[in-house]
Image 1: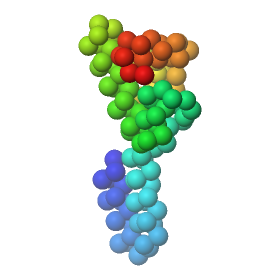
Image 2 (image 1 turned 90 degrees about the vertical axis):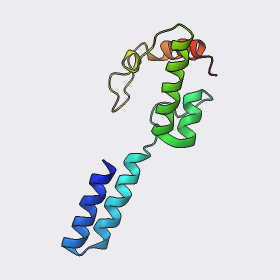
Image 3 (image 1 turned 180 degrees about the vertical axis):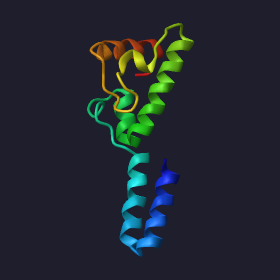
Length: 109
């Protein structure tokens, strides 16, 4: 997606002659790549620390590591078990309790 936005920005800057359009769209591509967290924004959980460090990209990485570690320890978790959408990361009602179980099963505190 970032490449598509960059190409569009280049096209707009060349056709419209506007460096401002290029700068705005290039900045927008970076914003998509490093979106801020909206759920795990407080506390000291692995996910909250990842959010503070690198936004959604880092949180996604840590959550996947937790799921993998839990699976290696004999438990089964999946993204859609707790999230209604992997785009918005909207939580299901069971998400908070299941996160505690995931944290325990993964051994990541």
